Image 1 (cartoon, helix red, strand yellow):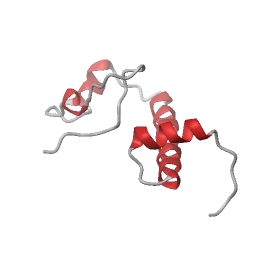
Image 2: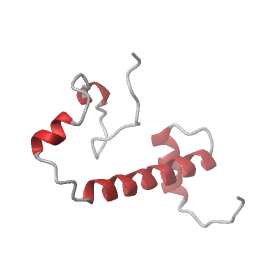
Image 3: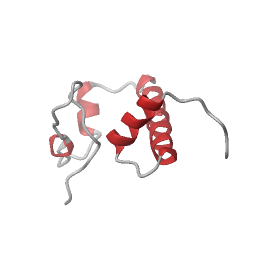
Image 4: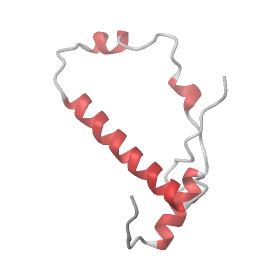
Length: 87
């Protein structure tokens, strides 16, 4: 869908740089998808599932290593581009 938008140039350039997007359109698409993902996750996690802490721990793959997916970078917010190690 084509549309005309007024977007802060500096903000858009930071998003392009942060995401590694090849185009401004791709950067906007990534940003919109991330906000959508976060809103859906918040909605799912906000539901009362009646699960105990143990139930939650056992609901995930035991061999899943979340630390292996984290990337540290020297940024003011401690966040860098979302990259994952290759397996």
